[in-house]
Length: 325
Ligand code: ADP
Image (cartoon, rainbow, N blue to C red; front, side, top):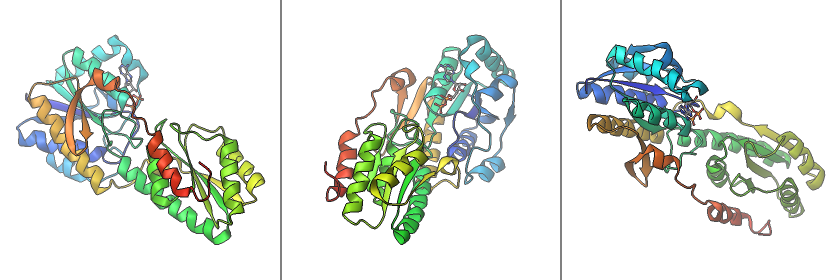
């Protein structure tokens, strides 16, 4: 194998650049030329493809976001559109691709592999919602951002004897909420996997108010309640705490990648190149404990989601003194 491409697709995540950098440097050390594809699958069909060198790889390594750009292109599910992309790759003599993204991006990678371009997927998302990997590139950085934000909100709530609702990202995966609530000692936690009704949240906070808890943090995952500001009003009416809601939003997606995310990105980037050198395609890289493994993409996409309810309830039991289980 002489020439490979690398692209980032779907939502951006800190550490994607470290993965791209790793692919460029490791492939180069194996005498393979690397081309970056700008803006994900969109760049593939528009021929936004350029050769990358070691200086570029070094310049992006520690940066947040994705320097080569990401985009969504739903039309990529269409065979005719993908054929354009394959033709562009062939024009440059590119034989294989590393695709950094989520489950949707893996689907595209699988389809391209079926069309003769070996693809290896790397798990890049802050949401940790890729079942085939224990952790995803970007999760650790986003978690640290969320924890820093909640700690700051806590300072103010504690000063003023208030309650706060904090909505965090996760795209139907409660890991960011669960880990952040654990790390900050949040009193109330509601995730997709273990949802509390608005009424239950109000009741829990009211119990805390009766026990004279000085401040209360309620962590909720995104896409669960129609309006967290309205939820804050209900909590205020029920508990008596002045209650404010904060939607952390895109602050969670940016920032310098943590050392752990860089390490995962760089080691998995090398692992992906090794797969391509071995002639494999249609695989995605995942972390199984502390070991990198390659899964068949089709199998990876049908893996059942791990049941987190016991874990969530155990964390909730830290507040059993306040909250009836
Ligand atoms: P993520 O990769 O983070 O899950 P998306 O679900 O938006 O993000 O998918 C990213 C891109 O992957 C899509 O915009 C599309 O170009 C491509 N993709 C998604 N599903 C398919 C599919 N079934 N076939 C081919 N390409 C797909």
